[in-house]
Length: 111
Image 1 (cartoon, one colour):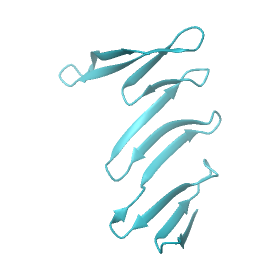
Image 2 (spheres, helix red, strand yellow):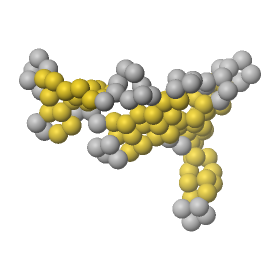
Image 3 (cartoon, helix red, strand yellow):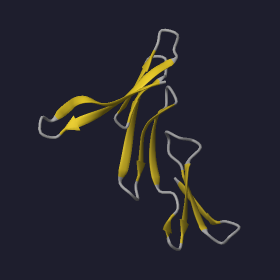
Image 4 (cartoon, one colour):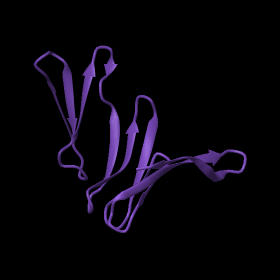
């Protein structure tokens, strides 16, 4: 479902609704192109963002969570938590095109 209108500045505005997201995703178009053109996907049962894509630049990120709804991975970054639930580290991984697998840690950041 979509609604459209004109804002205070005379710019076209559209609001998109889906069954998965009752709030809707807002996008605003201007004469020079699209101001906000993104796609989002949520795990409705848990309320977690699982996917987002910048449609204009064709860049996307996937998100995963553990059983306690803590962020585990996003965009090639892996999060690690201690037993108390405090973020201990995040690591970035490199994908080897030649070996076709994630091969080594690019950097390890202590939090």
